[in-house]
View 1 (tube, rainbow, N blue to C red):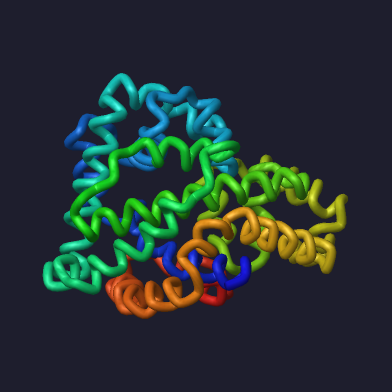
View 2: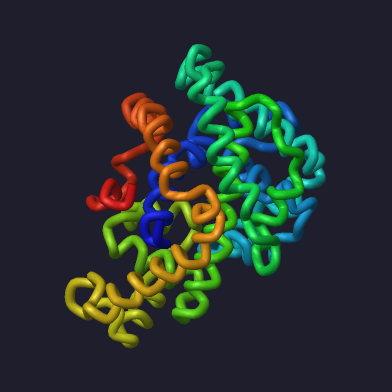
Length: 291
């Protein structure tokens, strides 16, 4: 297995992790734990394993959100609910969502147990926490014993490990959080522009200023706003470096293990898409190419 194949494997499975941000069970459980509905659910739910981090730490580890947006709910969230209670609530939400979406026959199946074991081999072979703060937080969470929850947990460790490396790659490419968001949107494989801008909390003025800066760097075409050849090359370098930095755990699983994992999990991913768990209209035209 090479790094690019491993990267594709991780991206293919990512929807089975990221359902946590879209299913109603997440908000229901976290509101019951004391949080306010809306943006607080995402920011506190994802950063709670770090303890009770200030807004600056969440901004650093999440990277492409407007700091003012994060500051509107962090650290206030920690006054409303204990981080440990938030983490526990999130795992309850995942448990319920998987059973609802896939069915008890699937979550209790031998295939799920096998998939959990395979993806856990990869996750348990992540080399370490150095330079991977968000992964480090999630790695401190006790490993679940229920197979479908363990499956999600292992995917989450791999996702956050990759995400921390992705930030390192973006910084190497001299792309700050907003630059990264704009150029990723321009590839057509991320969010659509309007959703990316509003979801990440950037004003039109802030977005326009960043676009002009990227045009001055000749990464965006001055007339169309699309990626230039240099811009696409830079994004390709970022993705290749991200794949390289995330390769070790997948290499430990091996090509045959990864192939078997995809074989088992592909129908589950398809079931989530079929049930419209994700608002596909919010994604760019090439979104499916990277999944």
